[in-house]
Image 1 (cartoon, rainbow, N blue to C red):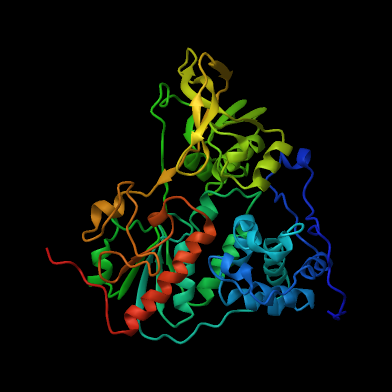
Image 2: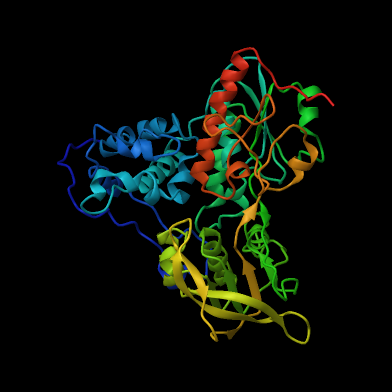
Length: 477
């Protein structure tokens, strides 16, 4: 591409991102955001002031060299921009789509002081997509350094840890419980937000670097952590098993047919491809749906239900819409598509019709009280405010916790009262020598990029651990 040097773009607003029409997209699973063209990307990149103090880099959990890659985009050097991102982030196409940049790198962007911040996420997505479409350069596997590391869990934390270690010459094997690597990227986030072909391409790039992936491997059942050390000679272990155990409410009717956890509902829709008529995946085709919760998972479940044919979808949330932890973009998209948000509303019971299946939910209104530890007003029930909502499906998106399998099958590890692994914040080191951990298994449900940041820290610590002549050990019994 011929480079034309132009003046900086001092617009106070981002270059708009093209999107599917809300009415049209509400009935398909194609990606909602359509991405920048090359011209749009270069124009947005010229909004970057190239700050010397680089606040955006510190705002990124994996410390992408943001000013450098954006400068390359402005110059039309898209391949070089991709290589620059890849120095610290092995999943750029994913991060450009699902990371909450508005709370991280873009939140501290100097352009955001007067106007909108630079569209860092949009530019990262453009660069990764452009590279996949135009370059497709094979990645050379580095010579082995002779050391072996096992990664348990193929989600964002595990993939990142594996990628960083492979770049250092380690023989890395990922043990993934599902039939595909990717974790929440393949079972949780819907196709219209993150096309699975993108995830597959990112995973394939790790395989090209020499990462071995063993699927359908439930560690704690097929093999134990101890066996990986004693029988397979892995010198260090990284536990990135996520937080996939759904939380249920203790209310009447929770066991009725038509009640789902968001995890099950989204797994059926995404990993098991219920959205694709070529697959015979059992899933309820609903007329009216209530999704309980206000995070990104709740938005994903609600928008998926709409696309699967529901005529009416409600999001029931006990705090205000402004207090929802979901990204503003996702809330905006949901409302555009016709999903109704019932904020300051809490559920009391789920009721069934004569056949036992869900027919309605009983709810009541809430009002804001004094701030709690999070700083948000604590919701307080409003007396005599109960009402009924006719629905035939209820999806619970109120949180998850780590699967207890590792806790019950592995000695020498410490866990907190919520079942999360206790690990050092800077290294991921656990209470057991040579075993490291990170991501949702440690923090509880968090963001993709935060899990990736934990994977990077653990990779650096594992390298230091093995380079010092140490290796994982099995505790004496």
